Image (cartoon, rainbow over all chains, first blue to last red; front, side):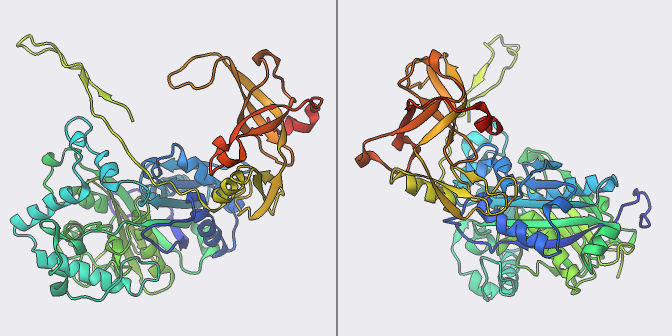
Length: 378
Length: 175
C-alpha cells in the first residue's frame, strides 16, 4: 500500500498496463459492434501477452440507446468469449465509469487484473434526440432540447460572466485540432489559427462549428492490474493514485453552468489537491486529458482542476478530435496512461464527463511512481 | 419507449388531479448488420443458410455474428448448411396479442440445422400444435424464389419432413 494523503484511505496500487483503440471514424459502415471490438480486445491482450483467462474481471461501458438494440452489451461479450463463465459487469455509462468499477473491485484485493472496454457508435441514431432523453422526462425531454443548444447556453453564460470569449473557445479548438495531427486515431486534425476558425458560421450562437465535437464511432479497451501483477505485465504501468466521480443536479436551472463543482470535488477525492493545490493554477502534472466535448468546457474544467498553465492539456486532441459517445471518457484515461507508459510523462490527470453541460464528472489521477501522486506541487 | 405517467394530488382549488402526461418518443436508426450477418443475409437471398465455423472449437454458428461467443475469436470460415434440422425444444403459443399475424395455437421451436452447433428460433406449421415433439425432423419452407431477399422472412416456416425423430442423444447438448 502506498502512503495515503491525509484524510484519504490507503489506495492499493492499480495501474493501466495496456491500451488498444480503433481509429475514430464518422461512420463505421461495415462492422457491427462485436466485429469492431474483437480486434481491439485481441490487441489489448496481445500487447502484454495475456489471454482472457488471465482476467479476474471484465467490465464494459456502453448504452443501448445508441444502437437501438436491447442488451447490446451482452452481445458485445461475444468479442471476449465468456466461457468458462467470467466475473463480468456493465455500466450504462461512459467506459470511464466501468474502469472505476473495476478499480474498486481490485481495491478489495481478491483479484489482480481486469479488462475494461467501451464501444460507442454515435452514427446509427439521431444523436440530438438520443441525448435529449437523458433530461428530465416530464418538462424538458418532451421539448427535445438538443445538446448543442444546451452547450450554447453554458457557453453564453461563460461569456456573460466575463470568464471567456469566443476567441478563447477558438483557441481551444485550434490547439486540439493541431495536436490531433500527431494522433493517428483522431478523426478531426487540422492546422488552423483561432482567427481562421472564427470565420466559421454559428451552429447555435455563440458556438461555431469548431467548438463542437465530431460525431464518432469508436472502441477502446484497457487492461488494469494491481501491484506486482502490473509490474510483471508492463515496464511502466500508469498507476492510478486516486479516482473519484461526482454528480450535480439534474435540472440545468439549479446549476451555475460556468463552474464545475462536481469536477472539483471529484479531484479532491482523487487526491489531486493538497494545501498548495487549492490555489488556482497550482496543480502541476505533465499531462491532463480532459473530456470536454465542447471547446468552452475545457476552460471550465481547467479552472475546476486548478491546472497550472504549464500542463499539456489534451495532447491527443481530446474530444474535439474524436468523441465516440461512451468511449471518449475512457479514452481520456487511456491517452493519459499511454503517456506515462511510454515514458513521456511522469504524472497525469484524466477526466471523463457525462450528462448535459458537464453534469457528472470523474477524475483519475495517475503517476509513473505510485508513491508520488499526481498534482502535488511543482 | 412508452408514454410517461405521473400522478398528482388535486390542489386546494379542488381541480381534478393530473394523472397522465403523454410524451411520445420515437427514435430512428440506421442499422449496420456487420460483415458476418451480411454474408448470412446474402445467403438467405440465394435460398441458403450460411453459418460460420470457429477456428478454435470448430463449432458452427448460424446465424453467425462474426465471433465465437465461447472463444472470443473471429469466425471467418463459412459453412453452407442444409435445409433440414431437428426441433430441440418448443413451445405452443395459445395467447393472443396485439399485432399477432399467425392463427393460434401455433408452435415456436428451437431448430438445430443439420451441421450447425447452435439452434435458432423458427415457426413450425403444417402440423397440429399438439403433435410437435422434441427430436422432430423438420425442413425449411421458402417463399417463391422471386420473393427471396435480405431477410429471414424469405423462410416462411419449417414443417415436418417425414423422417423418423432424431435420437435425444444427438441434440441433448443444444437445449
